[in-house]
Structures are given as structure tokens and as C-alpha cells.
Length: 371
Image 1 (spheres, rainbow, N blue to C red):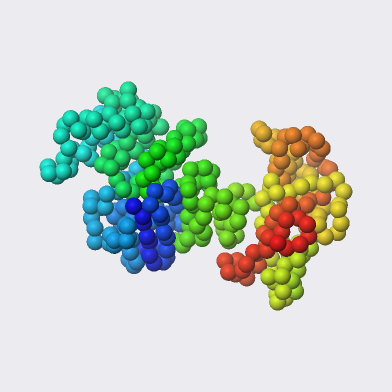
Image 2 (image 1 turned 180 degrees about the vertical axis):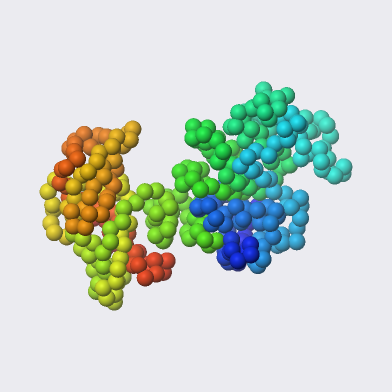
């Protein structure tokens, strides 16, 4: 089932939770709603489910407006962060619940219910827990049972609200890989809410980045990470370094960097900020020339498993810069605190400060020319 969200708005008193949201979710896609707390992602999910109503706009399932359709008639499965299992029921009865409470005319026979529950227990790989109670399960097991219960009614849309948020890091990683495999098998249109960037990047077909009730960017995990549309997306998805400077007559000056920027041909001395990820920086012992490097001093070197992180201070203005490299790359030329180096970004994007959402970013690949 496809989902179309058109000009959707929702306010709680003076607080605007959603502000004219537009979104298309194709049938069978797994979409992540990603953003900080309070950005509107859970409100949007609850409106899709029918648990909240919008003030303006509408939601269409396969082109049909669902505004007047009750939550029980939307054929939606919902998985909450804190499991919401019935503590007095066994695992078997929890999964069977949605089937047992159907109107008599649509209720499966007891034999059909038993077969369906066994099928779902096999799907979530927990057949041996049918007779246990929620209090006897681990957090990861409870969440898989909650998902099986949501799937029991054969929903056309599956909604998950921070489904792994209450679990520890190791279990979260295991379950999100399992969820991706499950989705590839079932192909149910699925929308899940998360504030975990790694989770969204690993699991989703597409990511919807939200901020202050609006959609900042929609794209594949690779698109939103490699080509962020706004400074907010850049900062929210992974670590970044900021290089402050000015744009003037088709050029951007950032400390020792001078970058051609034809997009800003008519710009006169406007403040600009370059965004550079720590792994997109090379460190040189000697400067190449005066326009492609920034001198800095190493202040700290930290080992992070397979990576080495170096903290630098730029010599010109004392701004802090982080650089990440593989252990092999670091071992080829180990640097120590106190060493002078020259920072050369391999890739960066520049936004003007006046209106970062509307300003076209400058792409730069380290050769001195805008691309």
C-alpha cells in the first residue's frame, strides 16, 4: 500500500508539531523518519496510524483519503518502543490477540489462529517461547514478539515508533539487521521513527530527515549522507568540522583555502561556512600551496578501535578540527601532539550564512575548483 501525505499540519496549543508536511511513500518501501526529539516524527507516525488527527491536510492510502477512517479500519500494524505486551498473557496469546478480537464474521477458527501464531513465531525465530510470559523474556525477545503481534492481523502498513530505543547497543544492532531481512522477505510498506542516524542509514530504503515539524530532506541513505541539502542535515548525520570564511565575487576564502564558487558570482563579502567530515581530510607535513591547505597543530591523538582520531587547532584562529583515519593510514606517518600539519579537505560543502536553506551549496573536491 502506498502512502501520500499532503500539506499535513498539527499544533498542540502554540506549539507547531507538523508544518505543511508533504511526503510520498511507495508501496513496499521501508522508510525512516529521522530527526531530533520534538521534530514531529512521532506525531506524523501517529497521524498515519489514526491515533492522532491532523489540523490540516490529509493522508491517502493507495489514493484514498483516510481522514474519516477509524484506526481499526486502516489495516495498520503498530509497534511501540516499550513493547506494550499484555503481561498476563502468554506469548502465544499475545500474538493471537488481534485475531481473537475480530468481529465474529471475520474471526479465524481456533485451528487457523493456532497455525498463524506458529507461523509468526517461526518468522521471528522464537517458536520455543510460545508458552512463556513477557516477564520471562529478554528485551530483544519482547520486541520481536510485539512485531509478531502487529503482523498477525496481516497489516498493509507497518509503523514502528523507536522500536529498538529501549535496548542496549548490541541487541539493537542485531535486531535492526533482523528487521531489514524480515522486510526484504515480507515487503510490507513500513515506516519507522528513530533519532539514531546509524540505525536509519543501515535499515531504511529512504530517509526522511525532519526538523521543527518540517521535512529537511528525503533521499536514500547514501544521498542524505553524501549530499546533505541543508546545514542541519549535514550536522545531524555524522560528525562535521566547520570552517568559517567569506564569499565574494565568485570565490570563497576559508582561512588558507580559496575556492572558486561561480554560484556566488554576484555575492559581495557574505559570511560563509564550509562543512567537512573528519574522514574527508588529509594531513600533510608540508603545505602544497597557499590556497589549498590550512596550517594547524596536533593537540591530541586517540585510538578508536579501527580508527585513529586527531584533534587539531588551526594556527590562524584557534578553531578546533577533528580528523579521522584508519589505523593503517596513521601508521604510515604517525603524528604526535605538538606536531605542525597542514589540513587539506578532500571534499567540502559551503553554505552562505544569510539563508542556508535556500543558498545553493558549493561542492569542492580538494583541487581548488568548485564542482
